[in-house]
Amino acid sequence: MDSAPWSDPPVTYVPSTVTRSAKIVVAGGFGVGKTTLIGSVSEVKPLRMEEPITQASVGVDDLRGTPEKTTTTVAMDFGRIHMAGGRLALYLFGLPGQARFQPLWEDLTEGALGCLVLADTRDLDASHDALGLLETCGVPYAVAINAFPDAPSYPEAELREALALDPGTPLTVCDARDRTSSLHALITLTEYLSERRSAALLESRP
Amino acid sequence: MTGPRRDPDMVRPYVRTGGQVRARDDVRPESVVVAANAPTEGLSPDARRVMRLFAGAGGGLAVADIAAALELPPSTVRILVSSLMDSGHLAAPVAAAGHQPDFDLLQEVLRGLRSMV
Ligand SMILES: Nc1nc2c(ncn2[C@@H]2O[C@H](COP(=O)(O)OP(=O)(O)OP(=O)(O)O)[C@@H](O)[C@H]2O)c(=O)[nH]1
Ligand SMILES: [Mg+2]
Image (cartoon, rainbow over all chains, first blue to last red; front, side, top):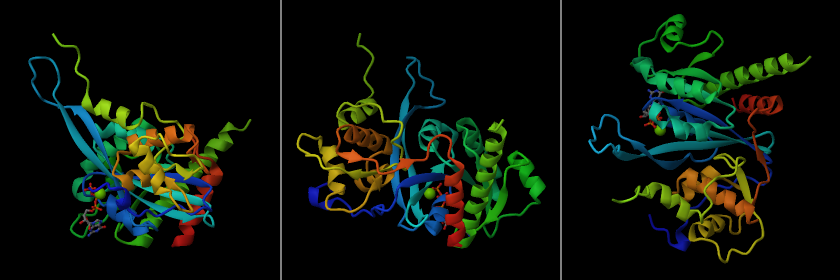
């Protein structure tokens, strides 16, 4: 990349009307449609940031006792929606769901309203890492099956069992390429989040 | 015998961020900041690059927007922004959602999403 002073890339500013920001995380296994979903609902061109993470390699037999280290770059796409008459900026961050990215997850999910987990019925096991990370980080979530044309469909009860979902966790189907369908998945998540929140408020009252 | 080797990946952000090693708790990837009026002489090259993104602009940028534009890791930008806030170069016009997102915020997001369908 050329970083000469005049070549800093153009940026899309947050309007000066914005007084508050919030984020929702979109998570799931490799190639499940995170970038596609973010792109279909974002009001600005989705951007990408990259975080290099260093970790001890697994399975390296090192006689000196110093674990070998490798650096992986984790790419995270994000988009932005402006709402509430331009007062609120909602950021959507795509997070790859591999368990070894846990430190990054802790940093990035902090303060999130919640998470939409995308799953593919051709590889439901690929969702387990993301679900486990969310439990660890204490982030509430809903699951959406991103329906690929050649993916098998299963009865809801079977999906819930395969994903080991709580009865209260929303499970929907979406097409990440379709804006309305993606919005509905996010609406289902947000309805769940606000129900949880109001239940917690009621409980905390004497 | 040599002492423990310094991890180059630990050293780099430290140097890049001018010695500040911890981000402020209120500076997260979605946190929006705006430029305040402060002279940029004496800032590190990376800090000047951050400030230059705001030059002549009417609006803010989130930490993630800055990381994407400058191709810097978000963890580094969080620290740079924290330090630029402490020095009065950047300010937060907005508070990002706290640990316990309040009900009103969720209602607002819900209304916003519904109005887009
Ligand atoms: N048919 C179909 N294809 C989809 C759908 N969503 C995504 N795709 C395609 O699947 C591929 C992967 O989608 P991405 O959005 O890049 O997935 P991702 O989760 O961001 O992938 P990584 O970031 O690489 O883990 C792309 O070629 C998409 O065009 C969908 O709902 N239906
Ligand atoms: Mg992607």
